[in-house]
Length: 159
Image 1 (cartoon, helix red, strand yellow):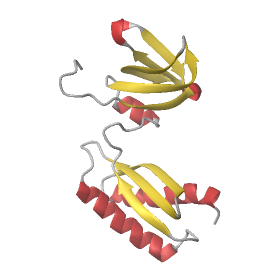
Image 2 (cartoon, helix red, strand yellow):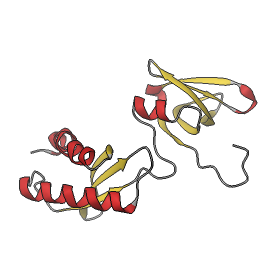
Image 3 (cartoon, rainbow, N blue to C red):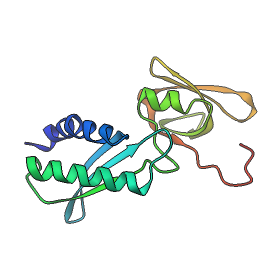
Image 4 (cartoon, rainbow, N blue to C red):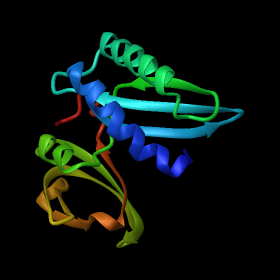
């Protein structure tokens, strides 16, 4: 199986494993990092992911992949949570985090700026709407967004 074929195969076969353990499979990355390959799974669940969740998914996925052996080279398996600054990729992510402060980075600048921060209002028909400081609403076509993730809020910030 080629690397191009592996990603959908992995998603199709590993999603039910994560689901059976009460998690969703938020992302799959299979990449060469230095001299080794890494298979990184990002899992999530509404109440948050703990170390036990990562361990349970890791063990179940490891057993499954050892039996089927679809990856034709050695790799390291990592199972992680999305983290505090999790990326927003799916419609479900945008719906779940509506009303939260997010960071948007664009491929091309608008008024000499590529980075925007504001409250997520919506994502409708591939248009992401946020309200920035001062109440101004900005809309970005999803195709022009390089990354969109939850903003990290530090203690003492007014959010």
